[in-house]
Length: 256
Image (cartoon, helix red, strand yellow):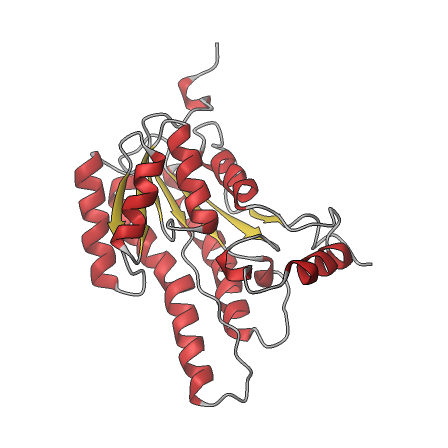
């Protein structure tokens, strides 16, 4: 009989998921809830969070949260810990599209600042706010969502590339700092996924890109990313930390 420390169940675990009102965040919230976790659904809009929480069931609760606001992070993380009685899992998923040409003047500066504040600084603030509670868990797990843009680059995308590359470095640093406490920190780098961020891309262009760039010749679905996130937060995933995992249909593996 396997040790409880090697359990493949997150039933009863408390999970915070940022950016959970849509896309990969929503898919992760729904999957975690279906696996028995107590899910805190966080995103900008309270009504959208409540709708996802209702879909999740199993006592999931929505919390409006702007991860660009450090005071809101401290307040909401505290409310979540009080409501559920602790925190075991943090999935940093919130993100924004951040394309901007270098010669866009002040507009570039605005996009740059927003990208780093939401997708990099926001992640470390979430970790630091949740850390006192994670330290009380016997299987604390942190998963940061980056992107294959953190492993390579697309023209005109430097704010997003910088933020997501920062997430991979943040993940390694946190893994080293928190490893002695048994808290694992890993990073997922999704490739082309069907989300609100890619809705503007026509389906025929998606198909052309996927066939040209990915080994599997298709876009991925949010649920496929969610399942890898689930694998990383299991109690049994106790000896993997500091990993940067592409979930990209083989995009980074393919040269031609």
